[in-house]
Image 1 (tube, rainbow, N blue to C red):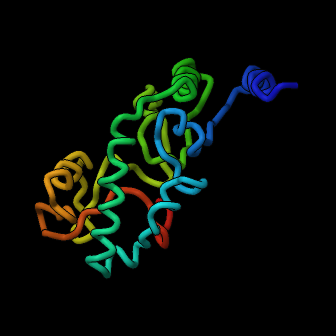
Image 2: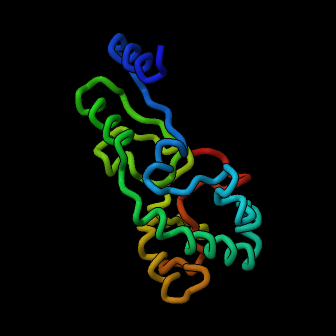
Length: 170
């Protein structure tokens, strides 16, 4: 049986479905993946949370890769897979989505019950005081020439609200 037909058959017989998604669902939308050949980590060395906290240079490297990949994330739109999952939820056939993706495309497609295991690229958090805010403001500051966006409240370093190497899942 073809995989798509098998999936349809399983869905039609199931009463409680949860989707678990990863990079494969969003690469069709133009979102770069991290681990494959040619992925983000083949071009940039990952910055661990410990390095980010301890080193101004590590924070600059982190925000350089965020700046250089910003357009890919900003231009991405939900694809047919995101839309199909949102329809299943809207029809009451799916309990929700658990995703490793940080792009927010499930929500853009209309999914309301989304658990983002690795956080979201759409928000930033201050490592000094814990304040959070929209990532777009930090991105605007980067594009205007700021190396490392800092918190307006306490001056601490901002970081995307995503999981870094060495950091526990939320």
